[in-house]
Image (cartoon, rainbow, N blue to C red):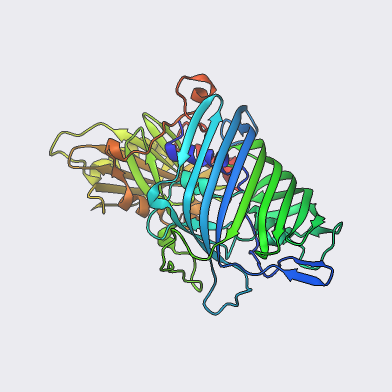
Length: 501
């Protein structure tokens, strides 16, 4: 049963069903130059904009029985969605950059970020928490990365904020040269990636036609088909649209797209086959309304701040929460088991199974020796050696026992990292990380992050939204909105031969 975060993440595509990720940078200097008579007008770099994006989506979600083992579609579910993003946006450049240089970052304040959807006759709504309205968007590498300078998003919130088109780089759809009515030009792959938030464009073309040149505006028609990818997941797009360049504002102020997208099933999210209508309105602003007067710190000469890249994951059923790297997703959440999976560019790195344990008698905590003995008994002949064992008090005040062992399953070298968490009230939970030996470097010691951040939750801390699995979505009353792969049958399923790529 997928958790709220898995649900919110999969619901992501409702709010941004066309959340295309990108592989190039926005370049406002490549703005349209429009000529009419003796007048030539070029789009000028903007510094502060108000943006509103509305999205209507209709189609089908496609899921497999287990995306780790096979991406073949097993079930489809109808979906409709309406989402709104309304924000003010301040463009950011390095201090020594020219005003016409590429915009590599933006600072936003979201006045509205919401989504209403119906998946298989079950309605849901999602809104951005008030504490998360201030955000930073980075575009040094793409897909663009969104993070909060002060707090931590959930996967669902991050997905909600993924715009189907980039308001930062929309001017890249303009021709970059003088035009007259009737002119036609092809939009290059870099511009398509940047505006549509795609990782790559592998084939196809999109063409723009100048359909009207007036004193105050130039209008364009867009049409084409492309195939590309988003973080290693294939996608196909057919689009038709209209765009307006405002000659007084010197920028693109209106974009409307009708898109049909077919996205492959990935290890982190379901696939889909949807049609969407997207409308974007942009207006320059003289002064910010809600953005902080003092600009947020952005160190352009440094990598993205790792300390801001965590997401909050919760198991509603086990009543535990943790802060983990964004590569981790809560894949399922059932009363007796929750499953998190680490996925990087559609490659499964590791899995973490969480399960509750019965309370211990007061004053009789488990010892490290007892935990090691339990690990040996659980793994049996699969275990080849005990690498290390340790115990500590976590940053959350929990007693943590940790045992690291190597072993083998189906001829594949495996590492298991087993952790036992308990508090003074006797509450306990066990976490079991499973990964193949060749994934140790990519895993990068994520067990240490879990050890210090896992905490037992009070009911008031648990996010709204009930998790669900495919069966509940298919017809059970009160089922939730999203779909995840079924949980593995044991700790080793994520390490089947099909996953060792």
